[in-house]
Image 1 (cartoon, rainbow, N blue to C red):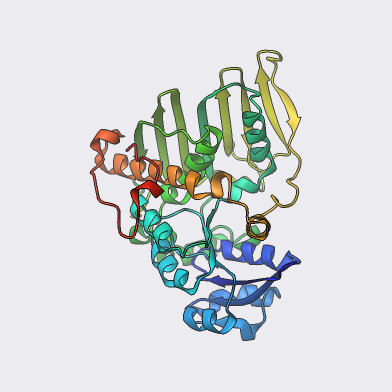
Image 2: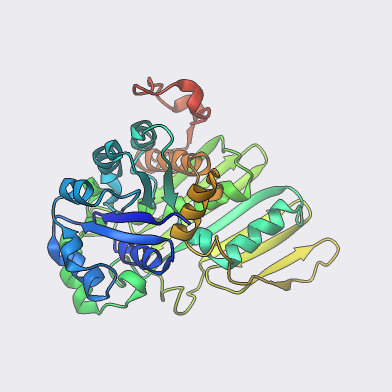
Length: 377
């Protein structure tokens, strides 16, 4: 099989370490280079043996020109996704961008427009690879609970600075030191729990609802003293078929991958014929149906290849010429971004936002309107 050459560029988001590990473990992937303007941020990947020091660059152009990768992973701050896609896409590579899609729908559309013909842009949502959430979607698509009418999501953790790559835990002292300079807490860089976590709920929620869009969004966020970004948001989306709620929280009592907090992080999906609860990192889902109304568990085994991680999935799709499916696809991710955009505006205006109140704008060249789905907001 083809050996895919991969580079990791921009280490703003600590998830770069996880993604490079997946690449390192893949038998048909070679990490040919990494790049970040701050050399210290590449040290962890080098020390863990994911890449040799002579393949680390502080200039992304030098990295791309010297290593000539097929695939590039980008992990910039949320507000920099469009900027970095525009920098790297001209090199004719396939791109994986770590969540969220972008800081705005306009930026997301510009990212799609910047991609060369026949090159893939993938938005990685780590929850897509969690067994419980994949099992929930499998049941939904099989019609196990009828037509989906409501989705509830609660997502978050103690905060983005409490852990690093591979979920390595940090101390309170480390968090206090990093917080003043972290992009996660800077409004201009796309910080805040809403932009960090809402896309999980809206994107997987769109997946569970078969790609349907809401017609109105209402959002509210907290206003923590001394911070310029939110740490808690609650968003209600009104669809033609019902209401769904998406909640984000930095400051849960515990991190869900160690010990689930209350409320538990995950999804509850209600349909015309039953319900499913799917919580983060569980190896089961809990189901009710008219035939069996008592809540009962169904196994949710760990995903099998090629759905164990995003690198494995992308390489499989590229090798077989298959289109991306699910939350990582542009079709589903873009709808999730539409809802995030509407939520940001709703929180700012302190009122509901619907398609009638959305300012009309021309698509940026070289976009063709037929390439984009209808915008409801």
